[in-house]
Amino acid sequence: MKILKFGGKSLSNGEGLNKVVSIISDKVNQGEQIAVVVSARGNATDELEYILKLAAKNGDYKTLLENFKTYQISDYPQVDLSEEFNVLDKLFEGVSLIGDYSNKIKDQILSKGELLSAKLLTAILKEKGVPANFVDSRELLKTDSKFGDAQPLEQLSKKNVVNYFKEHNGSTVNIVTGFIGSNNNNDTTTLGRNGSNYTASLIANYLNAEELQNFTHVDGIYTANPDLVADAKKIEYLSFNEANELANFGATILHAKTIIPLLEKNIPLRILNTFNHENRGTLITSDSAKEGIKTLSVLENLSLVNLEGRGLLGKSGVDARIFKVMGDHNISVSIISQGSSERGIGLVVATDKATTAMIELEKEFENDFYSKDVNQITVTDNVSVISIIGQDLSTFHKPYTALIKNKIVPILFNNTVTGKNVSLVVKKSELNKALNVIHGEIFGVSKKINIAIFGHGLVGGTLINQILESAAAIEKRKDIKLNVFAIANSKKVLLNKNGVTSDWKNQIQKEGLEYTINDVIAYANQHHLENLIAIDNTASATFVENYISLIESSFDLI
Image (cartoon, rainbow, N blue to C red; front, top):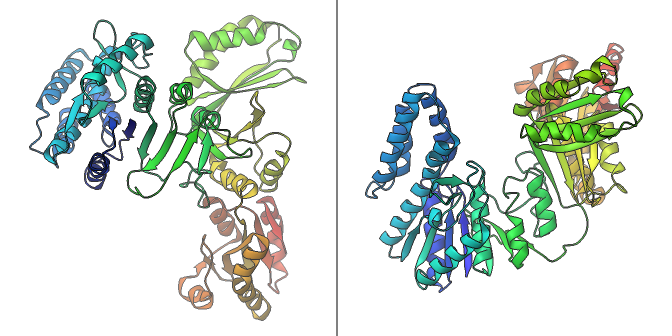
Protein backbone atom coordinates (compact mmCIF):
# COMPACT_ATOMS: atom_id res chain seq x y z
CA MET A 1 0.00 0.00 0.00
CA LYS A 2 1.05 3.58 -0.71
CA ILE A 3 0.02 6.52 1.45
CA LEU A 4 -0.78 9.73 -0.44
CA LYS A 5 -0.80 13.01 1.42
CA PHE A 6 -2.18 16.21 -0.15
CA GLY A 7 -1.39 19.69 1.17
CA GLY A 8 -3.66 22.71 1.47
CA LYS A 9 -2.70 24.36 -1.82
CA SER A 10 -3.22 21.07 -3.65
CA LEU A 11 -6.78 20.91 -2.29
CA SER A 12 -7.73 24.52 -3.09
CA ASN A 13 -10.74 25.27 -5.28
CA GLY A 14 -10.44 24.91 -9.03
CA GLU A 15 -7.36 23.31 -10.58
CA GLY A 16 -6.01 22.00 -7.27
CA LEU A 17 -8.99 19.92 -6.21
CA ASN A 18 -9.51 18.71 -9.79
CA LYS A 19 -5.90 17.54 -10.00
CA VAL A 20 -6.18 15.67 -6.68
CA VAL A 21 -9.32 13.86 -7.83
CA SER A 22 -7.59 12.99 -11.12
CA ILE A 23 -4.46 11.62 -9.38
CA ILE A 24 -6.49 9.43 -7.01
CA SER A 25 -8.77 8.20 -9.82
CA ASP A 26 -5.78 7.30 -12.03
CA LYS A 27 -4.12 5.30 -9.26
CA VAL A 28 -7.36 3.42 -8.50
CA ASN A 29 -7.88 2.66 -12.20
CA GLN A 30 -4.32 1.32 -12.41
CA GLY A 31 -5.08 -1.07 -9.55
CA GLU A 32 -2.84 0.60 -6.97
CA GLN A 33 -3.78 0.13 -3.33
CA ILE A 34 -3.72 3.54 -1.68
CA ALA A 35 -4.89 5.51 1.34
CA VAL A 36 -5.12 9.31 1.35
CA VAL A 37 -4.34 11.80 4.13
CA VAL A 38 -5.52 15.39 3.64
CA SER A 39 -4.70 18.80 5.07
CA ALA A 40 -7.22 21.59 5.44
CA ARG A 41 -8.06 23.18 2.08
CA GLY A 42 -6.34 26.39 1.00
CA ASN A 43 -5.59 28.62 3.99
CA ALA A 44 -8.42 27.19 6.11
CA THR A 45 -6.40 26.69 9.30
CA ASP A 46 -5.02 30.24 9.26
CA GLU A 47 -8.48 31.64 8.49
CA LEU A 48 -10.12 29.73 11.34
CA GLU A 49 -7.44 30.90 13.77
CA TYR A 50 -7.90 34.52 12.68
CA ILE A 51 -11.69 34.28 13.03
CA LEU A 52 -11.21 32.74 16.48
CA LYS A 53 -9.03 35.64 17.66
CA LEU A 54 -11.51 38.15 16.22
CA ALA A 55 -14.45 36.46 17.97
CA ALA A 56 -12.57 36.52 21.28
CA LYS A 57 -12.24 40.31 20.90
CA ASN A 58 -15.99 40.56 20.27
CA GLY A 59 -15.26 41.65 16.70
CA ASP A 60 -17.46 41.16 13.65
CA TYR A 61 -16.37 37.58 12.95
CA LYS A 62 -19.61 36.46 11.29
CA THR A 63 -18.85 38.01 7.89
CA LEU A 64 -15.49 36.25 7.73
CA LEU A 65 -17.06 32.99 8.88
CA GLU A 66 -19.67 33.17 6.12
CA ASN A 67 -16.91 33.87 3.57
CA PHE A 68 -15.05 30.83 4.90
CA LYS A 69 -18.12 28.63 4.50
CA THR A 70 -18.78 29.95 1.00
CA TYR A 71 -15.26 29.06 -0.14
CA GLN A 72 -15.42 25.59 1.38
CA ILE A 73 -18.64 24.71 -0.45
CA SER A 74 -18.65 27.05 -3.48
CA ASP A 75 -17.58 24.59 -6.21
CA TYR A 76 -19.65 21.70 -4.80
CA PRO A 77 -22.87 23.10 -3.23
CA GLN A 78 -24.48 19.66 -3.43
CA VAL A 79 -22.12 18.29 -0.75
CA ASP A 80 -23.61 18.51 2.76
CA LEU A 81 -21.11 20.07 5.18
CA SER A 82 -23.76 21.54 7.47
CA GLU A 83 -22.74 19.42 10.47
CA GLU A 84 -19.28 20.99 10.67
CA PHE A 85 -20.60 24.47 9.86
CA ASN A 86 -23.16 24.25 12.68
CA VAL A 87 -20.48 23.25 15.19
CA LEU A 88 -18.33 26.20 14.10
CA ASP A 89 -21.29 28.57 14.52
CA LYS A 90 -21.85 27.43 18.09
CA LEU A 91 -18.18 27.43 19.07
CA PHE A 92 -17.51 30.92 17.69
CA GLU A 93 -20.68 32.27 19.30
CA GLY A 94 -19.57 30.91 22.66
CA VAL A 95 -16.08 32.40 22.29
CA SER A 96 -17.61 35.76 21.35
CA LEU A 97 -19.88 35.76 24.41
CA ILE A 98 -17.13 34.77 26.86
CA GLY A 99 -14.43 36.86 25.21
CA ASP A 100 -11.83 34.15 25.61
CA TYR A 101 -11.01 30.56 24.62
CA SER A 102 -8.89 27.65 25.79
CA ASN A 103 -6.46 25.57 23.73
CA LYS A 104 -9.03 22.79 23.95
CA ILE A 105 -11.63 24.98 22.19
CA LYS A 106 -9.02 26.14 19.68
CA ASP A 107 -8.24 22.52 18.75
CA GLN A 108 -11.95 21.80 18.21
CA ILE A 109 -12.21 24.77 15.86
CA LEU A 110 -8.99 24.17 13.90
CA SER A 111 -9.86 20.50 13.44
CA LYS A 112 -12.80 21.51 11.23
CA GLY A 113 -10.44 22.42 8.38
CA GLU A 114 -9.32 18.81 7.93
CA LEU A 115 -12.80 17.39 8.58
CA LEU A 116 -14.33 19.61 5.89
CA SER A 117 -11.51 18.75 3.50
CA ALA A 118 -11.83 14.97 3.94
CA LYS A 119 -15.65 14.97 3.79
CA LEU A 120 -15.68 17.07 0.62
CA LEU A 121 -13.02 15.00 -1.16
CA THR A 122 -14.80 11.76 -0.21
CA ALA A 123 -18.10 13.04 -1.62
CA ILE A 124 -16.48 14.22 -4.89
CA LEU A 125 -14.72 10.88 -5.41
CA LYS A 126 -17.97 8.99 -4.86
CA GLU A 127 -19.65 11.27 -7.41
CA LYS A 128 -16.91 10.35 -9.89
CA GLY A 129 -17.47 6.64 -9.28
CA VAL A 130 -14.41 6.09 -7.09
CA PRO A 131 -15.20 3.99 -3.97
CA ALA A 132 -14.11 6.27 -1.13
CA ASN A 133 -14.55 6.16 2.64
CA PHE A 134 -14.32 9.15 5.01
CA VAL A 135 -12.08 8.43 8.01
CA ASP A 136 -12.09 10.66 11.10
CA SER A 137 -8.57 10.21 12.49
CA ARG A 138 -9.82 11.15 15.97
CA GLU A 139 -11.15 7.59 16.14
CA LEU A 140 -7.72 6.17 15.28
CA LEU A 141 -4.95 8.38 16.66
CA LYS A 142 -5.10 8.56 20.43
CA THR A 143 -2.91 11.23 22.03
CA ASP A 144 -2.03 12.86 25.31
CA SER A 145 -3.96 15.98 26.37
CA LYS A 146 -1.44 18.61 25.33
CA PHE A 147 -3.85 20.60 23.21
CA GLY A 148 -2.19 22.32 20.26
CA ASP A 149 0.82 20.00 20.16
CA ALA A 150 -0.41 16.57 21.22
CA GLN A 151 1.79 13.48 21.17
CA PRO A 152 0.34 10.17 19.90
CA LEU A 153 -0.01 7.19 22.24
CA GLU A 154 1.80 4.85 19.92
CA GLN A 155 0.65 1.36 20.88
CA LEU A 156 -3.04 2.26 21.12
CA SER A 157 -2.95 4.34 17.94
CA LYS A 158 -1.20 1.59 16.00
CA LYS A 159 -3.74 -1.00 17.15
CA ASN A 160 -6.63 1.25 16.10
CA VAL A 161 -5.16 1.96 12.65
CA VAL A 162 -4.30 -1.66 11.90
CA ASN A 163 -7.72 -2.93 12.96
CA TYR A 164 -9.56 -0.21 11.05
CA PHE A 165 -7.71 -0.87 7.79
CA LYS A 166 -8.32 -4.62 8.12
CA GLU A 167 -12.04 -3.90 8.15
CA HIS A 168 -12.15 -0.98 5.70
CA ASN A 169 -9.73 -1.74 2.92
CA GLY A 170 -9.64 -3.66 -0.32
CA SER A 171 -11.09 -1.63 -3.18
CA THR A 172 -12.15 1.28 -0.95
CA VAL A 173 -9.94 4.37 -0.78
CA ASN A 174 -9.79 5.65 2.80
CA ILE A 175 -9.69 9.47 2.99
CA VAL A 176 -8.12 10.28 6.37
CA THR A 177 -8.12 13.60 8.18
CA GLY A 178 -4.59 14.78 8.93
CA PHE A 179 -3.44 16.93 11.84
CA ILE A 180 -6.02 15.76 14.40
CA GLY A 181 -6.48 13.06 17.04
CA SER A 182 -8.24 12.68 20.37
CA ASN A 183 -7.31 11.96 23.98
CA ASN A 184 -8.73 9.18 26.17
CA ASN A 185 -11.76 11.39 26.97
CA ASN A 186 -12.39 11.70 23.21
CA ASP A 187 -11.58 15.42 23.31
CA THR A 188 -10.23 16.68 19.98
CA THR A 189 -6.47 17.34 19.89
CA THR A 190 -4.12 18.59 17.18
CA LEU A 191 -0.57 17.47 16.41
CA GLY A 192 0.96 20.92 15.88
CA ARG A 193 1.18 22.99 12.72
CA ASN A 194 2.06 20.98 9.59
CA GLY A 195 0.87 17.98 11.58
CA SER A 196 -0.90 16.42 8.58
CA ASN A 197 2.50 15.25 7.34
CA TYR A 198 3.02 13.64 10.74
CA THR A 199 -0.35 11.88 10.51
CA ALA A 200 0.57 10.47 7.10
CA SER A 201 3.97 9.36 8.40
CA LEU A 202 2.45 7.58 11.41
CA ILE A 203 -0.14 5.75 9.29
CA ALA A 204 2.57 4.72 6.82
CA ASN A 205 4.56 3.32 9.76
CA TYR A 206 1.62 1.45 11.32
CA LEU A 207 0.60 -0.11 7.99
CA ASN A 208 4.17 -0.85 6.78
CA ALA A 209 3.45 1.16 3.65
CA GLU A 210 5.49 0.74 0.51
CA GLU A 211 5.96 4.50 0.10
CA LEU A 212 4.65 7.83 1.40
CA GLN A 213 3.93 10.28 -1.42
CA ASN A 214 3.64 13.86 -0.24
CA PHE A 215 1.89 15.98 -2.90
CA THR A 216 2.60 19.71 -2.66
CA HIS A 217 2.69 22.72 -5.02
CA VAL A 218 6.41 22.40 -5.92
CA ASP A 219 8.39 19.81 -7.91
CA GLY A 220 10.37 18.63 -4.89
CA ILE A 221 13.06 19.91 -2.55
CA TYR A 222 15.44 22.47 -4.03
CA THR A 223 18.97 23.61 -3.32
CA ALA A 224 17.32 26.79 -1.97
CA ASN A 225 13.87 28.37 -1.92
CA PRO A 226 13.17 29.12 -5.63
CA ASP A 227 11.21 32.21 -4.57
CA LEU A 228 14.42 33.65 -3.12
CA VAL A 229 17.09 32.11 -5.37
CA ALA A 230 16.24 32.06 -9.08
CA ASP A 231 19.05 29.57 -9.86
CA ALA A 232 17.88 26.96 -7.33
CA LYS A 233 17.95 23.38 -8.65
CA LYS A 234 15.74 20.42 -7.73
CA ILE A 235 17.39 17.70 -5.63
CA GLU A 236 16.69 14.19 -6.92
CA TYR A 237 17.69 12.21 -3.80
CA LEU A 238 18.13 12.90 -0.08
CA SER A 239 18.85 10.70 2.92
CA PHE A 240 16.53 10.69 5.94
CA ASN A 241 19.26 12.34 8.03
CA GLU A 242 19.58 15.20 5.56
CA ALA A 243 15.81 15.59 5.36
CA ASN A 244 15.63 15.68 9.16
CA GLU A 245 18.21 18.49 9.25
CA LEU A 246 16.11 20.34 6.66
CA ALA A 247 12.95 19.90 8.69
CA ASN A 248 14.57 21.20 11.84
CA PHE A 249 16.07 24.20 10.08
CA GLY A 250 13.07 25.68 8.37
CA ALA A 251 12.02 23.51 5.41
CA THR A 252 8.26 23.97 5.65
CA ILE A 253 7.65 21.20 3.15
CA LEU A 254 8.53 18.73 5.94
CA HIS A 255 7.34 18.47 9.53
CA ALA A 256 10.19 17.99 11.98
CA LYS A 257 8.57 14.81 13.39
CA THR A 258 7.69 13.30 10.00
CA ILE A 259 10.98 11.54 9.33
CA ILE A 260 11.30 9.33 12.44
CA PRO A 261 8.30 7.00 11.81
CA LEU A 262 9.48 6.50 8.22
CA LEU A 263 13.08 5.87 9.24
CA GLU A 264 11.96 3.23 11.77
CA LYS A 265 10.37 1.16 8.99
CA ASN A 266 12.64 2.27 6.13
CA ILE A 267 9.67 3.68 4.20
CA PRO A 268 10.67 5.97 1.29
CA LEU A 269 9.20 9.49 1.20
CA ARG A 270 8.67 11.11 -2.19
CA ILE A 271 7.92 14.85 -2.50
CA LEU A 272 5.73 15.42 -5.59
CA ASN A 273 3.95 18.29 -7.33
CA THR A 274 0.17 17.96 -7.60
CA PHE A 275 0.22 20.38 -10.54
CA ASN A 276 3.04 18.63 -12.42
CA HIS A 277 2.30 14.98 -11.95
CA GLU A 278 4.81 13.83 -14.58
CA ASN A 279 7.71 15.11 -12.48
CA ARG A 280 9.38 12.42 -10.38
CA GLY A 281 9.97 14.77 -7.44
CA THR A 282 12.54 14.26 -4.67
CA LEU A 283 12.98 10.77 -3.19
CA ILE A 284 14.05 10.51 0.46
CA THR A 285 15.34 7.12 1.64
CA SER A 286 17.58 5.61 4.31
CA ASP A 287 20.34 5.11 1.74
CA SER A 288 23.23 7.48 2.28
CA ALA A 289 23.06 9.95 -0.54
CA LYS A 290 26.28 11.23 -2.09
CA GLU A 291 28.11 13.34 0.47
CA GLY A 292 28.33 17.07 0.00
CA ILE A 293 26.26 20.21 0.36
CA LYS A 294 22.63 19.52 -0.49
CA THR A 295 20.60 22.64 0.13
CA LEU A 296 20.17 25.95 1.92
CA SER A 297 17.27 26.28 4.33
CA VAL A 298 16.00 29.37 6.11
CA LEU A 299 14.42 30.23 9.46
CA GLU A 300 12.72 33.63 9.71
CA ASN A 301 10.84 35.72 12.30
CA LEU A 302 13.69 35.30 14.76
CA SER A 303 15.54 37.41 17.32
CA LEU A 304 18.97 37.08 18.90
CA VAL A 305 19.17 37.23 22.71
CA ASN A 306 22.69 38.05 23.90
CA LEU A 307 23.94 37.57 27.47
CA GLU A 308 27.37 39.10 28.10
CA GLY A 309 29.49 39.14 31.23
CA ARG A 310 33.21 39.15 31.87
CA GLY A 311 32.62 37.96 35.43
CA LEU A 312 30.98 34.73 34.28
CA LEU A 313 34.13 33.37 32.66
CA GLY A 314 34.93 30.04 34.22
CA LYS A 315 31.82 29.93 36.41
CA SER A 316 29.93 26.63 36.36
CA GLY A 317 26.16 26.32 36.10
CA VAL A 318 25.56 29.44 33.99
CA ASP A 319 24.34 27.50 30.97
CA ALA A 320 22.04 25.41 33.14
CA ARG A 321 20.46 28.56 34.59
CA ILE A 322 19.89 30.00 31.12
CA PHE A 323 18.27 26.87 29.76
CA LYS A 324 16.14 26.41 32.85
CA VAL A 325 14.68 29.86 32.18
CA MET A 326 14.04 28.89 28.56
CA GLY A 327 12.43 25.59 29.54
CA ASP A 328 10.26 27.06 32.30
CA HIS A 329 8.75 29.53 29.83
CA ASN A 330 8.43 27.14 26.88
CA ILE A 331 10.92 29.06 24.74
CA SER A 332 12.57 26.96 22.04
CA VAL A 333 16.17 27.82 21.15
CA SER A 334 17.12 27.13 17.53
CA ILE A 335 20.77 28.29 17.51
CA ILE A 336 23.27 28.64 20.36
CA SER A 337 26.66 30.34 20.10
CA GLN A 338 29.20 30.90 22.88
CA GLY A 339 32.26 33.09 23.09
CA SER A 340 35.09 32.51 25.53
CA SER A 341 37.31 35.64 25.54
CA GLU A 342 34.50 37.82 26.87
CA ARG A 343 31.97 35.42 28.27
CA GLY A 344 28.94 35.66 26.03
CA ILE A 345 26.08 33.43 24.97
CA GLY A 346 23.84 34.12 21.99
CA LEU A 347 20.46 32.41 21.73
CA VAL A 348 18.27 32.56 18.64
CA VAL A 349 14.57 32.39 19.54
CA ALA A 350 11.23 33.18 17.90
CA THR A 351 10.65 36.94 17.81
CA ASP A 352 7.38 36.68 19.73
CA LYS A 353 9.29 35.00 22.60
CA ALA A 354 12.33 37.31 22.65
CA THR A 355 11.02 39.93 25.08
CA THR A 356 9.89 37.24 27.53
CA ALA A 357 13.30 35.59 27.29
CA MET A 358 15.11 38.86 28.06
CA ILE A 359 12.85 39.78 30.98
CA GLU A 360 13.07 36.34 32.58
CA LEU A 361 16.84 36.15 32.11
CA GLU A 362 17.19 39.57 33.75
CA LYS A 363 15.24 38.22 36.74
CA GLU A 364 17.38 35.09 36.92
CA PHE A 365 20.66 37.06 36.77
CA GLU A 366 19.55 40.03 38.89
CA ASN A 367 22.20 39.45 41.57
CA ASP A 368 24.87 38.97 38.90
CA PHE A 369 24.12 42.47 37.58
CA TYR A 370 24.78 43.91 41.03
CA SER A 371 28.06 42.01 41.33
CA LYS A 372 28.85 43.08 37.73
CA ASP A 373 29.41 39.49 36.67
CA VAL A 374 26.78 40.13 33.97
CA ASN A 375 27.23 43.28 31.89
CA GLN A 376 24.07 43.26 29.79
CA ILE A 377 21.29 41.19 28.23
CA THR A 378 20.15 42.51 24.86
CA VAL A 379 17.81 41.54 22.04
CA THR A 380 18.50 42.00 18.34
CA ASP A 381 15.30 41.69 16.31
CA ASN A 382 14.86 41.01 12.59
CA VAL A 383 17.43 38.27 12.13
CA SER A 384 17.27 35.15 9.97
CA VAL A 385 19.13 31.85 10.01
CA ILE A 386 20.62 30.29 6.89
CA SER A 387 21.57 26.63 7.31
CA ILE A 388 23.92 25.02 4.79
CA ILE A 389 22.89 21.35 4.90
CA GLY A 390 25.91 19.12 4.23
CA GLN A 391 28.49 21.88 4.82
CA ASP A 392 31.47 21.19 7.06
CA LEU A 393 34.04 23.66 8.32
CA SER A 394 36.81 22.41 6.00
CA THR A 395 35.37 24.34 3.03
CA PHE A 396 33.23 26.87 4.89
CA HIS A 397 35.78 29.61 4.13
CA LYS A 398 34.51 29.78 0.54
CA PRO A 399 30.91 30.90 1.17
CA TYR A 400 32.06 32.94 4.20
CA THR A 401 34.63 34.84 2.12
CA ALA A 402 32.03 35.45 -0.58
CA LEU A 403 29.69 36.98 2.02
CA ILE A 404 32.40 39.28 3.40
CA LYS A 405 33.32 40.39 -0.13
CA ASN A 406 29.68 41.37 -0.61
CA LYS A 407 29.69 43.37 2.63
CA ILE A 408 27.54 40.82 4.50
CA VAL A 409 28.98 40.07 7.93
CA PRO A 410 27.19 37.20 9.75
CA ILE A 411 26.19 38.06 13.31
CA LEU A 412 27.23 34.58 14.44
CA PHE A 413 27.53 31.04 13.11
CA ASN A 414 27.77 27.51 14.46
CA ASN A 415 27.95 23.95 13.22
CA THR A 416 26.12 20.85 14.39
CA VAL A 417 27.61 17.98 16.39
CA THR A 418 27.87 15.91 13.18
CA GLY A 419 29.88 18.71 11.58
CA LYS A 420 27.72 18.48 8.46
CA ASN A 421 25.55 21.54 8.87
CA VAL A 422 26.68 25.13 9.33
CA SER A 423 24.15 27.78 10.34
CA LEU A 424 24.63 31.53 9.93
CA VAL A 425 22.65 34.27 11.62
CA VAL A 426 22.28 37.34 9.36
CA LYS A 427 20.21 40.51 9.37
CA LYS A 428 16.81 39.92 7.83
CA SER A 429 17.45 42.77 5.39
CA GLU A 430 20.49 40.87 4.06
CA LEU A 431 18.83 37.44 3.84
CA ASN A 432 17.97 37.44 0.13
CA LYS A 433 21.35 38.68 -1.00
CA ALA A 434 23.18 36.35 1.39
CA LEU A 435 21.27 33.32 0.07
CA ASN A 436 22.14 34.17 -3.53
CA VAL A 437 25.80 34.79 -2.70
CA ILE A 438 26.17 31.47 -0.84
CA HIS A 439 24.16 29.53 -3.43
CA GLY A 440 26.23 30.93 -6.30
CA GLU A 441 29.45 30.06 -4.48
CA ILE A 442 28.80 26.45 -3.47
CA PHE A 443 26.48 24.97 -6.10
CA GLY A 444 27.14 24.09 -9.71
CA VAL A 445 25.58 27.23 -11.15
CA SER A 446 27.20 30.13 -12.92
CA LYS A 447 28.56 32.84 -10.67
CA LYS A 448 26.71 36.04 -11.49
CA ILE A 449 28.65 39.30 -11.82
CA ASN A 450 26.38 42.36 -11.78
CA ILE A 451 27.86 45.28 -13.71
CA ALA A 452 27.01 48.98 -13.77
CA ILE A 453 28.61 50.88 -16.66
CA PHE A 454 28.95 54.65 -16.49
CA GLY A 455 29.57 56.32 -19.84
CA HIS A 456 28.54 54.83 -23.18
CA GLY A 457 30.42 56.83 -25.77
CA LEU A 458 32.69 55.16 -28.33
CA VAL A 459 34.74 53.23 -25.75
CA GLY A 460 31.89 52.60 -23.30
CA GLY A 461 29.40 51.62 -26.02
CA THR A 462 31.90 49.21 -27.57
CA LEU A 463 32.55 47.58 -24.19
CA ILE A 464 28.81 47.17 -23.53
CA ASN A 465 28.27 45.49 -26.90
CA GLN A 466 31.32 43.24 -26.39
CA ILE A 467 30.02 42.08 -23.00
CA LEU A 468 26.52 41.39 -24.36
CA GLU A 469 27.86 39.54 -27.42
CA SER A 470 30.36 37.47 -25.40
CA ALA A 471 28.23 36.76 -22.33
CA ALA A 472 26.90 33.35 -23.46
CA ALA A 473 30.34 32.08 -24.46
CA ILE A 474 31.93 33.33 -21.24
CA GLU A 475 29.24 31.64 -19.13
CA LYS A 476 29.73 28.36 -20.98
CA ARG A 477 33.53 28.51 -20.77
CA LYS A 478 34.06 30.06 -17.34
CA ASP A 479 30.77 29.50 -15.44
CA ILE A 480 30.59 33.27 -14.97
CA LYS A 481 27.42 35.12 -15.93
CA LEU A 482 28.01 38.78 -16.80
CA ASN A 483 24.85 40.76 -16.11
CA VAL A 484 24.85 44.45 -17.09
CA PHE A 485 22.12 45.81 -14.84
CA ALA A 486 22.85 49.55 -15.26
CA ILE A 487 24.00 51.79 -18.12
CA ALA A 488 24.33 55.50 -17.40
CA ASN A 489 25.40 58.72 -19.03
CA SER A 490 25.74 62.09 -17.35
CA LYS A 491 21.97 62.59 -17.21
CA LYS A 492 20.09 59.28 -17.45
CA VAL A 493 20.40 55.68 -16.31
CA LEU A 494 18.84 52.50 -17.73
CA LEU A 495 18.18 49.89 -15.02
CA ASN A 496 17.23 46.23 -15.44
CA LYS A 497 17.97 43.68 -12.69
CA ASN A 498 17.85 40.84 -15.27
CA GLY A 499 20.28 42.57 -17.62
CA VAL A 500 19.98 45.07 -20.45
CA THR A 501 19.44 43.95 -24.06
CA SER A 502 21.22 44.77 -27.29
CA ASP A 503 18.66 47.54 -27.84
CA TRP A 504 20.07 49.48 -24.88
CA LYS A 505 20.79 52.66 -26.91
CA ASN A 506 17.13 53.16 -27.81
CA GLN A 507 15.95 52.10 -24.38
CA ILE A 508 18.13 54.59 -22.50
CA GLN A 509 16.71 57.39 -24.66
CA LYS A 510 13.09 56.29 -24.16
CA GLU A 511 13.16 54.72 -20.68
CA GLY A 512 16.21 56.31 -19.05
CA LEU A 513 15.67 57.98 -15.69
CA GLU A 514 17.36 60.96 -14.12
CA TYR A 515 19.62 59.70 -11.35
CA THR A 516 22.33 60.16 -8.76
CA ILE A 517 24.92 57.54 -7.87
CA ASN A 518 22.88 56.72 -4.75
CA ASP A 519 19.93 55.69 -6.97
CA VAL A 520 22.07 53.03 -8.66
CA ILE A 521 23.36 51.81 -5.29
CA ALA A 522 19.82 51.71 -3.90
CA TYR A 523 18.60 49.72 -6.93
CA ALA A 524 21.34 47.13 -6.41
CA ASN A 525 20.42 46.84 -2.73
CA GLN A 526 16.68 46.68 -3.41
CA HIS A 527 17.13 43.74 -5.79
CA HIS A 528 19.80 42.00 -3.67
CA LEU A 529 22.36 42.06 -6.50
CA GLU A 530 25.62 40.36 -5.55
CA ASN A 531 29.22 40.54 -6.86
CA LEU A 532 28.97 44.16 -7.97
CA ILE A 533 31.34 45.92 -10.39
CA ALA A 534 31.20 49.56 -11.48
CA ILE A 535 33.00 50.51 -14.70
CA ASP A 536 33.94 54.16 -15.24
CA ASN A 537 34.06 54.89 -18.97
CA THR A 538 33.39 58.58 -18.51
CA ALA A 539 35.77 61.42 -19.34
CA SER A 540 34.53 63.21 -16.23
CA ALA A 541 36.94 64.20 -13.48
CA THR A 542 34.00 64.80 -11.13
CA PHE A 543 32.77 61.19 -11.47
CA VAL A 544 35.79 60.14 -9.41
CA GLU A 545 33.97 61.69 -6.44
CA ASN A 546 31.53 58.74 -6.62
CA TYR A 547 34.24 56.11 -6.08
CA ILE A 548 34.10 56.15 -2.26
CA SER A 549 30.30 55.68 -2.22
CA LEU A 550 30.56 52.79 -4.68
CA ILE A 551 33.37 51.08 -2.74
CA GLU A 552 31.52 51.46 0.56
CA SER A 553 28.52 49.78 -1.11
CA SER A 554 30.68 46.71 -2.06
CA PHE A 555 31.27 47.63 -5.73
CA ASP A 556 34.62 46.74 -7.26
CA LEU A 557 35.88 49.48 -9.61
CA ILE A 558 37.25 49.34 -13.12
